[in-house]
Length: 227
Image (cartoon, rainbow, N blue to C red; front, side, top):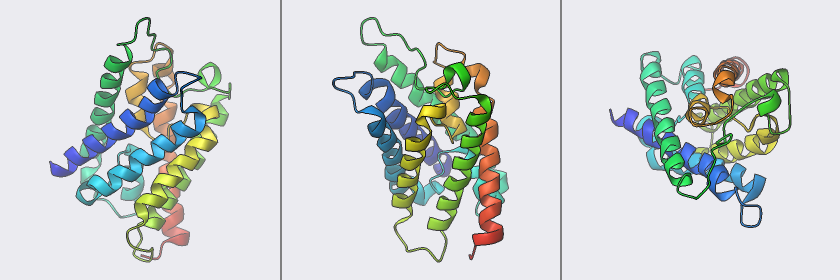
């Protein structure tokens, strides 16, 4: 239960801090933190929670990461579904709190609510194929960075920094394409509160990150893994 609680609160913080930065802090052109600020916020949420609760649960906060670690032999398959449930519930709880806060402003409309999407829901109007490809590729490399930075051959104590900066880079690349998922729990949480058709497109933001995680884990295990 301690592990599941850590995953719940870690995913809560990721969605609350990352999506909150987009919903609240980037909502005003004159006062907002902008594209770079949102990307940095996502990276900081993961970095801080890895050091805060990573020692309890492993610091996944993402169903794709849990799957990739299981494929790589770093995580017990029997814990996969309980982790997924804790992560999704943590994300939804964070999105609900964000909705309550954001709706405290007069005239507030949720709109996309920082949800992910392709075609008409893509910030840059990118196609479904483009969205699928970028989510698969970026999640695969995210897993490679996670596995590499936490390997026995990596310098001790720096994994959180590498992982947090990797997630920041991922957002810098893909916010214009999909608003960046690489995390099905994050995508599910915001899609539930969006006023768009985000729920109809949610399938892609489960399928693509999970495929990418498996590819990244297999690549690491077959070609790069030295544990």
